[in-house]
Length: 234
Image 1 (cartoon, rainbow, N blue to C red):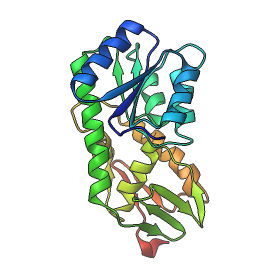
Image 2: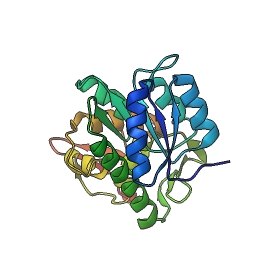
Image 3: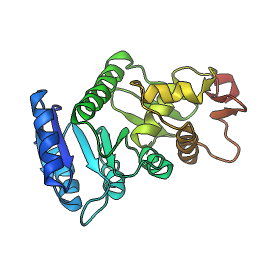
Image 4: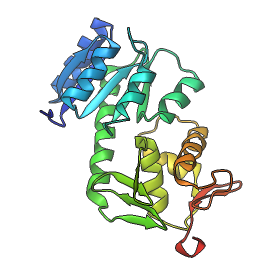
């Protein structure tokens, strides 16, 4: 039976850290469930359907990267990753496989809670603002069902790929800078490198373009960013 959207799964093998995070989240009215092992975390995410996941990268039995990949196969639940290293490759990796945000250890529990609340506000805002089905040629994005199809075939997109495609399809012909697209995902001042967008665009093209090397839907505007093709370009 699905848990409340206010229920947060904490996957963290350090019991002191997980207990501290639990305390601060519960003070803000959230319920929590905890996993100290990677495989247990994945099973809880699958079985309990939490409304949010806080996922440490370094976990016994299965690391956070693989757990995130597996969760994205069956759920669009927001995922915040915890990493002990503030390195570019970790940030790119986490965001490119579908994480919504990341926090570097050691962190302030209050900041972590604010990150969680900010992500949930963005998710809620998106769900309320636009329920129009977006289409282009054989591509269709249904924001109510959170479903993307191509020629009638359902596509398996990560959360980040979905959000990026929705932003682009909602304004055909509009040129988005990388910073504008990043702002759609990260709205409370954290520093994120713009190459993350290029990573997502590349993966998205592999899924929606008939020839990813010669894209006809997501067009590169050199020196600036990207735009989605207008209907007459199809």
